[in-house]
Length: 290
Image 1 (spheres, helix red, strand yellow):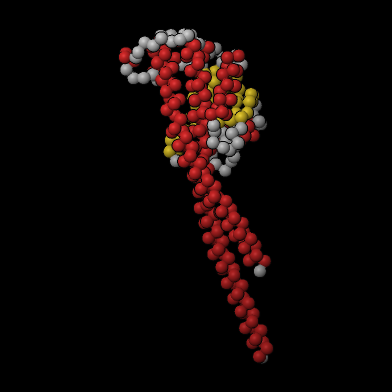
Image 2: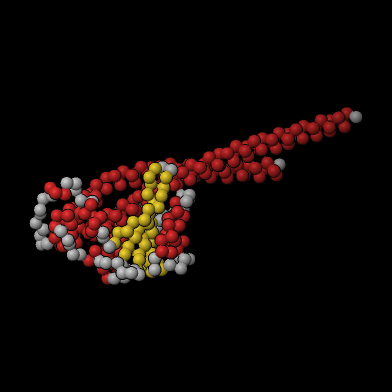
């Protein structure tokens, strides 16, 4: 009886776990759809800003801006690491951390700016300097948080705290292909931005920039950087939900298999107990008759 009681308790615990994993799977699916919809809606706006900056550089020639500062030989590098606020997402965070370690080994003076509490709990035990930590509170990133982070990064860059800025986040190429992406966002690359302008550069209208082309460019640059950070955060959020959905789906399958195996074992033990009791009753009855 004790063995049957233990099996019932184990099966009850697995059923409760199965309910949780199924619920998290459904929640992640809904969040994934919402995140992809928001990303698709906002991406054209920030792409248009990038093209406008490229058009300024293509049509107005060279532009002098602090966002084009030359990187020294041994720069102080800031790395924005986008992780999650919760676990149970398979190898989502581990892949990002591995990419960060690989980049830090190549840089002379790496400084970390963390987005997500999982990244903070991990890198607090590392030898790298943590300049700031931002929490997304397990919700869909919004423009206000992206504005706060971009303002902080731009201010530190212009003050000379660091000379270049990288961002590492997870891009979802497909539901089963989540790959960490490394992008340099500061200083800006003039040649790359010229190539991102509208097609048909020979036909670009020669605009008059008021008060100057540098002022217009310096106004668009923070918007562009905010767009890059916001896009990375939403991409990471979508990838996190996809990873968690896959992890919970796999956990549900494992729980179902384990529950099925325990059910078979429970039935065998129960049947053996019944058979043993019947045998005892028959033996006792025979003894009484004798």
